[in-house]
Every structure is written in C-alpha cells, then in structure tokens.
Amino acid sequence: MHPWNSTVGSASLKLMLKLLPRLFQRRILIEDSMKSKVASLRVARMALSPPDPQFVLRGTSAAVHTLHFSCGGQEPDVPILFSGSQNGFIHVWNLKTHRVDMTLDGHGRKSVYCVETMGGKNRLLSQGRDQRICLWDLAEGRASVTDSVFTENVGFCRCSLLKVAQGRWLMAMAAKALEEVQVLELPSKTSVCTLKPELSCGSQPLLLAGYEDGSVVLWNLSMGKASSQLGCHQEPVMSLDFDSEKAKGISGSSEKVLSIWSLNEQQNLQVYKTHKLVNAGISDITIRPDKKILATAGWDHRIRIFGWKKLKPLAVLDYHTATVHCVSFSDHTDLSERLLAAGSKDHRISIWSIYT
Image (cartoon, rainbow, N blue to C red; front, side, top):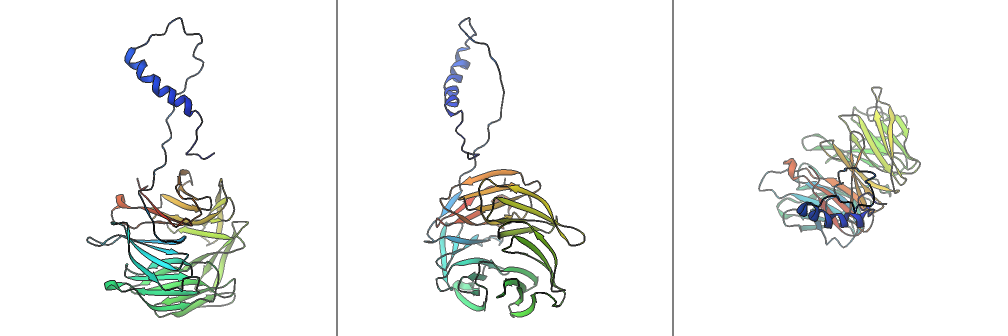
C-alpha cells in the first residue's frame, strides 16, 4: 500500500470530524446509556500529506530524459531549466513565465540524455543518441553548435564534467570498448587518457564509474588504473552520485536496492549499507547540494526523497503517470527559492518546492 495514500480508517475519521464539534459545543456528559467502557486510547500525530508540484512544465511532446538548472545568476538574470527529450530537442525553460524561451535542435532528432552548462547559462554541453556531444553558444539569442565530439559508444552512459581552471574542463565519457573510459580536456578536445589496464598519464582527479555488471569502479587517472572495485548490484548500475565531503556515494540499478558505499583512507570502496525499495528500477539519483537529502527517479512513476545521513525515507512524490527518467536540484543563490525538477516519459516536468 502506498505510504502516503492509506485509506485505512477513513470512514471513522470522517465520523469523528462530524461528532467532535457537537461534543465541544454541548459539553455532553457521560451517562448510564454508555453500554461499553473505553478499552484503549492512543493520541497520535497525523502524517503530513506529501506536497503537490509547485507547477508543471508541458510542451516537450516527448519523454524527458535529462534536466539541468541554471539559477545562480544575479538579478535581473532569469532562472533557467534546460531539458533534453527523446525527440532530440533541448528546451530552455523560463522559470518565471513557466514557458519555453528557446528550443535547440542539434542531435538529428535522436534522444538527448545529458545537458550541462559550462561556466554560465550561455555555454551549454549536450549529449545525444546520435553519438555526438555538442558544445553550444547561446549568448545574445544565438542557438548554434560551436563544436562537437563524436563518441563511438552507443549506450546511455552520460558524460561527466569537472572544471579544472577558468575556461577549462575535463570530460569523461564511455569509450568504444565496453570497459574503457576516455577523458578529454575541453574546449581543446585534447585526449588526457583512456582508462584501461597498464596505461599511465598525467596527474588528474579520481573518477567513479558504474558498470553493467553491477559494479562501481574507482579510477586513478594519474595511474590510468582502477584502484578499487566494488560489486554493488546484481543488475546494471543505472545512476550514481558521490558526496566528496563525506567520501560516501550511492548507486541505483534496475533492481529493488539502493547501495550506499564509502571510500576509506586507503582509497578502497566498501559497502556502507543497502536500502530495499518497494518497487524495482532507479533511473537517476541526485544528492542535494547541501548534502541533507537526496532524490531518486523511479520506474514506478514516483520520486522518492531520503535523508542523506541515514537514508531515512522522507517523502514519496506521486504525480507522474509513467517512468521518471531524471531528477535535478536547482542552484538558486537564495536557499529558500531552490527547487527539485523531475522529468518523465509522460512528457511532463514537475517542479517541487521541498527545501524546507
């Protein structure tokens, strides 16, 4: 039974609501007509109902596969949400008007499953099923692809960006060989290294990768080798996120388990705990920037909110009518304005205000 929609005792509750005002207004006394003694009493706090979406964005005409906020600018900058859809379009949503400001078409109508900004909302990176990663220039109303990288991998593994200096990023992406990860420097597209056995390259940050065999692997880029591997799931890893402050991460798969793992002082991955879900299938996981809660996107159409410290279930957001593909927390400067967005196969993007 859905934890937020329990109907047990609903008839009794309605009856109590009708009777209580009379009892208080008339001060009815207990009389001999009472046939039975009170057997048990319990005062309980009623569980709060989950919130409704603050608003819903419609008009993608296709399943939404990825979301990315850009809300951290100063006034009069307008908070923006980018969405990538199965039909190959990228929509730029104005979060004040709740309408599309711009539609980008650069992936040959092939599904877009990763969108990231690079140092501001005018520089965009997108990845699609056309095996291309595109770099966009959106300044002054432009909507042009300035450069692209061809990826030989045909899967759904999203690339990952890390800013290393002003105007410079590292980009990790799945390579043609199933077990390999390629790392490039942008915007030069210079190859940094390809992560495979017995290869060395310059000193670089660490990288986490989830694999179809259910394992999570920690790569040392300076050695070009895997420093630790952990079997987390029985099914392919669909999504993962990592908290570098706590050296702890979480992954979800097509099974009914969330796996929480940590990185010890020897740079070895180890299982921290697991959490069993009601229904199978996690499309996406994201930890909120303040590291207090996380959100999951479920195949069961629901968004689940957990406390990050102990993975305590906090809420089940039930709005969508099909698989939820992606979740994303906004980067508003004002914490009270921060939002959660969820994109679904039902062509809708739900926006939730759950920060408080």
